[in-house]
Amino acid sequence: MRIALLSYSTKPRGGVVHTLALAEALAAAGEDVTVWTLGRGGDSGFFRPVDSRVRQRIVPFPDREGEGVGPRILRSIDALRAAFDPADYHIVHAQDCISANAVERCVRTVHHLDQFTTPELAACHERAIVRPFAHVCVSAAVAEELRQGWGIKATVIPNGVDARRFAQAAEDGPARRRWQAELGHYVLAVGGIEPRKGTLDLLEAYAILRESDPGVRLVIAGGETLFDYRDYRARFDKRAAELGVEPMMLGPVGHDELPSLVAAAGVFAFPSTKEGFGLAAMEALAAGVPVVTRELPVLREVFGGAARFAEDPAGFATQFRAALDDPDSLRVAGQTLAAGYSWEKAASDHVRLYRDLLS
Image (tube, rainbow, N blue to C red; front, side):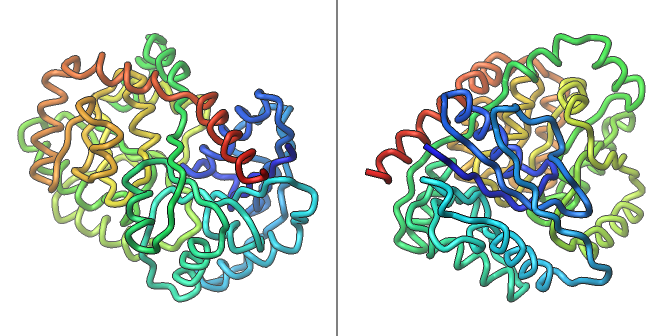
């Protein structure tokens, strides 16, 4: 099969990580795969090397000074639509709302459902749900949201996890010690400062944790995003000053450095308010790091008894403390869970779905 996987960015966001890993697994299984995306800000390639068996089509998408979120969404859709020819492929599979709006007929993976206030983005989100002719969800909980909200039946295909890569980082003592020498004893969150990541709750929890453990740091990595969260970031900075805490903001971390950064953490914080699977937290489990996540149906489904759960900042602080005091209590369960997800299995399930659709 000639398969096109469409994404909206070259940056290391969860959906992009998923797209590349799935593309490589499909290519390894013998399929003809091309990944299409937008090269934002002059990008000519993805955030990491991609298997040579996967073709890449990076559509130029230069920044425009002062451009608002709504116009940028519409320009993104138009740029990808103008460059992409669906006639070249048997299967067109969009991984986000922008790419699903850029094509007339596609399979769509709904990683998670969201609510937007920007009119153009809200319309993009809705069209990207109702227009595709087939849907994939990475968890049963999101598939149920899709069924209840839109009457759509989705095929559930969980993410894979590159568990070996993160497990090997846990065994790399020098790399872990370099991070610990630089950062000390730390709670790690990955994904930047934004509402969906629950970063303000994380900040409040950290301030509570500091009362009993003033030596622990909060480290936040990542942050590349299409959306404008400046107001939320201003609230975060203001609240940090009020609480008298100074989280360390690492910004984007290189692909090769991320596993050891995760493996060196004392605990991985995952307070997201919306998720489809929780790939970053699953990678932390693969590295043997305790995970504290929000009490959400989807995260209960995915992580079960391998993570600690909390509902509010006080609960997160309590669970951070428990994880730091007893880091080994769920380690085997977490590593076993992470090792059970593979991109090879995800690719096999996608191929089966594609062949069913084509027939």
